[in-house]
Image 1 (cartoon, rainbow, N blue to C red):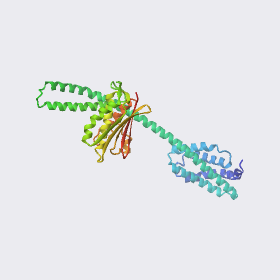
Image 2: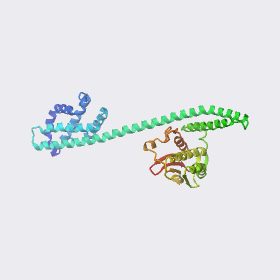
Image 3: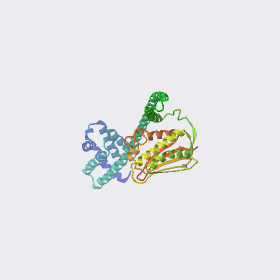
Image 4: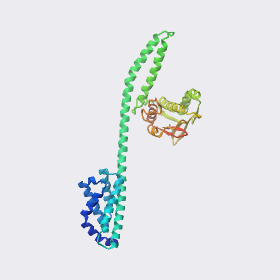
Length: 374
């Protein structure tokens, strides 16, 4: 036995005789005195006292880890604030220290016992903190897993509703469109009311586009998703940017395309064209809010055997709180937006085995499309 612990032998024996009184004094001092009549509180405090006595007696330090784990779990179960709980250690140490100071023993024995006491509480606090952090990490992991599961369930339910909604609306829309076309063929070319037919057809096309967007929100593949053709991004982006030239010119937007002519992938060109067009359309809308020079820069390159398409604009920064959910359905940066566009883009890209990300800062906002090569 350590000679230092030999000096504390008398202290241990005297404290053991005062155990009941010490525990009672400690309970009164604890911030959560409301639990004082709780049998488990008394048991845990008694176990802590016995571990402290073993430490003072120099028997073993092995119990400190187990004791720290039990104390941390007790705090978690009782829901006691961590800072408040740490303060209770100091209160307990103070009570025991006062008892040691009042013992009828030599000063050197008291000082040695107080040193060992302080060392014990320092170590037990350390072990308790470590295990509390471990328990917190477990709880956080469980919450993250639950949130991920809820998000998956939400998207699955949304996908089913969207698919059902799309099919329920598409059938009557097809019938309406057919009858309108039939009426149109029977009407004379010079009839004034023919303009109304054109307006109806235009509105039907808008409804069909919205229905198709809802259908694309589903994460289950449909017959359109099964189409697989070789897509040359150079041709696709050239045709898309040309379609936007008039609106960009009208609004003083400098549209630049810089892409390799070797980028290819497999999938539905119609769907990927739609995704790119929606992102560029969002960029054009964002640039309407700035007075400085307006630019959209599209570049494509091969990185790590992946097609990387970057669509950048120097419009306003997307707020951080919105950036986290920007690809969620019904989340929009526009005041009257439906919040389907970017969600549809993400679904299309992911169905093609790729990823879609957004980074936004004061200087520019960048959407990065990553798709398999070849």
